[in-house]
Image (cartoon, rainbow, N blue to C red; front, side, top):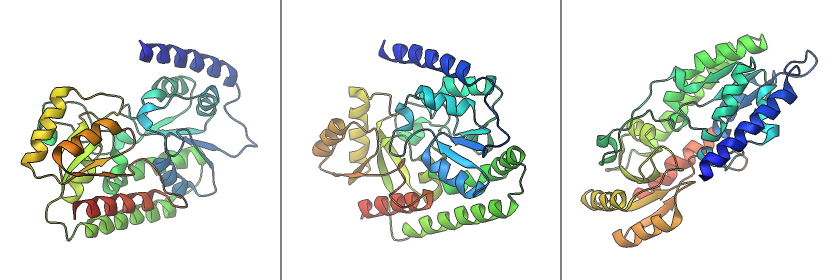
Length: 298
């Protein structure tokens, strides 16, 4: 009931914002506006466009992408953008109606998920039967993100009418170098076995030789809930795999994680999978993430 009410309110906001912004979507004198849904992706886009456009991030840094509802101002920003860049695959659940409206209003929308190799969640990934669907947590593997850079650059060049080839080359090189650095972080780890807050680290695990045993919330979305059966199955798997730490993250239910930690006799360690560090960007976030996982496993 609460979710349906939120959707009704969002639908009303979208309609109002669309009517307010109609006819004001372009301005020859204004700096082009590239609207990006979340901060990690926004940082990558900023490095691609430099000072040729204004990059506006809708979901505030530190806010769970799965649990964000836009304001009328946010929706208006999307409807008046030169280009909107989103993750796709319903990662930005609360923005779906607004993204659809922006496209209907004639705003080009670029979905990163349309241009990368996607992973599917299967029972083999988690150890219990919550298979199906495509994993939206693309940004947690720099090399998967690299796959989208050529198409993203082309979309930005078409929108801005500029040559971004040199920036494309640098961003691609930087992402590949970042991945090499992350891989070296795990060089001394014999067994990288993970229990996570929700199913967010499958891309990361596959790239860097880790195994996700399961998640406190066995879903791609933190908006989901775990049943008693889910938690019992996770506890059994964690014991079988000799898991020594539960990695929590933004959106992990703290009371459930604390109970599992106590029952298993393992520590809790918080990861930053969605939040850019103060004074840093995507690169620093990913290096911090790798370092936190590696230190937690030692």
